[in-house]
Image (tube, rainbow, N blue to C red):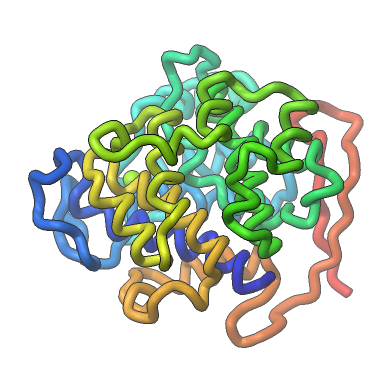
Length: 338
Ligand SMILES: [Mg+2]
């Protein structure tokens, strides 16, 4: 399972880095991506990643350090935005419109439960792009405590993306990732009849547009109907299209980024799926060794997985307890050694 958990985060960063050079470009307006390349709107170096990975690293750091605390998560996103911490080159250089607005609200009011816009008009893909740390860290809740996993996934979206579409997308994607991390077969996990999907809808019905994806809309469409859109619904659908019948990690992620437009984020979402499914060992060595600042990704993994490639670096025993204080701290996870 460690291989799949590590694969989900490394896959996110690989997909992000592969797409970065063609972000905002129309499909077929660029030479087909086959590996890392320089350039893109932020003129980054080959193998460097963008806000998708930075926010995932901030989320992972928050979970490892503070347990489950939405204000802490939002504070770390602000730290990235304002200081460049968690950025591949130490400089902040990219942020989504919805994220910027929500973090501005958080800076003003200091409440991550209300900082995200709840309107469906504000349904960007910014919370699914960074989601992997949640199923990586809390995958043990699969599958007999799906209500808890679903709630954590939902809450992780709220600081920046509080719309029903975004929240539903996070609940569904986190459950799919947890299933893949547990080495469930892809066809079973993506099936409309998948039992955990039925349980998710019993807990709280998914948004109808996310429901269409769960029923297999991604199987019916080909580009240009599938597009690298910034809208959470189209973005999740395109990522699942790229993943669902690919034969390798590389094939899946390259399909995703070659849709263009929000290529880095389609790549990051597809990379989470493909990495969780094929594991770190399924990611080609050239893509792993070419990834910039692997030390930052290793550090994040050490915090949420507790294992490094070199072996056990710490012994994490986790206690999940309810906090009487507020919804913000509904799940307070304390890590103790021993
Ligand atoms: Mg990005």
